[in-house]
Length: 376
DNA sequence: AATCCGGGGAC
DNA sequence: GTCCCAGGATT
Image 1 (cartoon, rainbow, N blue to C red):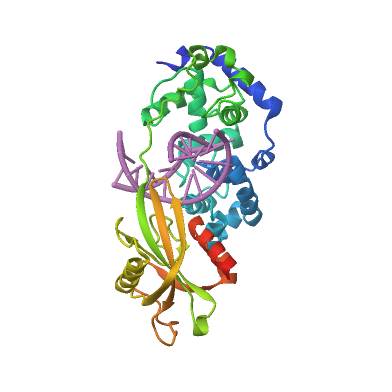
Image 2: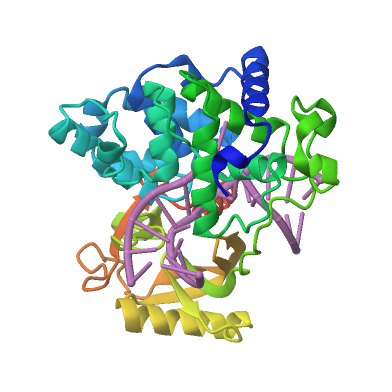
């Protein structure tokens, strides 16, 4: 159905815009007009809450205030500033795209859909967000929030997980933008979704457009949007080695860097192995498995000593159940400086406690280190 | 169309 | 425990 057939479009847009201007939140990126700053905020906000992003946004722009600064930075430093935010390819893509802007566009963030959509990590949402917020161009910025709001007010019952539904939403959202008000209107839509038309128990009693909300009239605001349920994360059992050095490496812990691609790409971690679900259920068996597999796969000769701690971590699609064992190196003299594993996908290194700030770790390992160093 | 890619907060 | 969030890339 054509967007022009949806009723109360003008009412909806004007009321929402007025609501936004009456009491919009004072967010850090709303204090800047720099398209680069807007861009950074939008990438950080992908799948991430406003409150989570704020401290990262400040730290990131303090260190990389300009496109030139980010373009010139070492990649590890960018990754370290992203530590804990998740979806780390966002950081790599952002830096890659910033370098592209510097080289191809003379350091000016493009202001056309065609150009900006070619940048790495800039999809339909981020493209529309930058064009509308930074340049006030009448492009829709449809995220999960916007789809929820539109699904309710206009009673759209298609599954919002289907790509086709997104197209419908984008057309409708485009048709709603008041002349010359793209930036504020798009932000109004998202702010409204976050504060009033929330996923669960929407605040209909304070809603500025409740009178003409189709879902509200049908009493179905709790049933919309329709969204197919995601598959549960598959369980993975992992055994990790907390290996403390001796001799010249006394007081240090052996860490390794993950491969260039895939899950947690280029992040650092404790050496660990993936075992079958039923395997290593007793500590004795687990320690045998750990020793055997680290030797076989990584040519890393360790002697597991005792269970150290247990850690769980859930990604979108995987659940890690990780048992950590305190280990010693098997080599008698402890001299392993030239004998760290090679010819594996990982890069090994000794790390002193005070060197943690140089390496980016997934949160599950940050938690383990924090607990380990607390014990001394 | 389905899967991969983090982490945390609200309930 | 459950749900979902200011999504994008890859296949």
